[in-house]
Structure formats: C-alpha cells, structure tokens
Image (cartoon, rainbow, N blue to C red):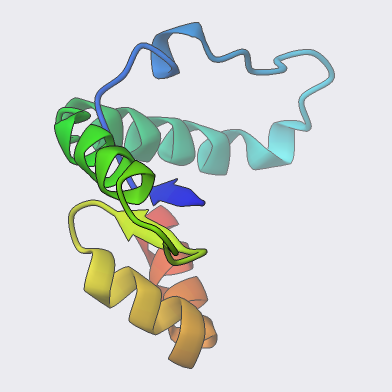
Length: 96
C-alpha cells in the first residue's frame, strides 16, 4: 500500500464537496479547513516520489505492506502511532 502525504495532482481540482444543507455553526471551521487544504495542495511536492516508491515496490520480491511517502513523513507517522492525541490537538489548534 502506498500512502502519499501531500502531492500536486489534479485530484484536488476535481474534488467534489457537498455544499447543500451545511450547518452554519461550522462555517468558520469549514473555511479554515478549506484554506488549509488549498495551502497543502499549493505547497505540495510533485508526484515523482510516489512514482519512485511504486517502481521500488514493483521491483521488490517481498515489499512492505505500508509505504508512506512525502514531506514531514517521519513526524506524521510518529504522531499517528505514538502520540495520536498530540496530533489531534495540533490539528485542532491550527483551525483556531
């Protein structure tokens, strides 16, 4: 499994978001999440590292199941595995 973090692709341009029946109380958070998502897409790497990891997997007899790839990968994987509450609080702070 290849697990890309943030990469420049056209997927973000073609993403569909539901705008109907939006709860107004969440509008501020929605705007902040949309802005952070756009910033992530704007500053993302080109997809070459993903292509390289796929080539490596194809050429490996017994590849690893998990193949994360991307900027700040070590920190994100560490927080997901060993400090999930810290990751969650960091994400929530960025929305405030």
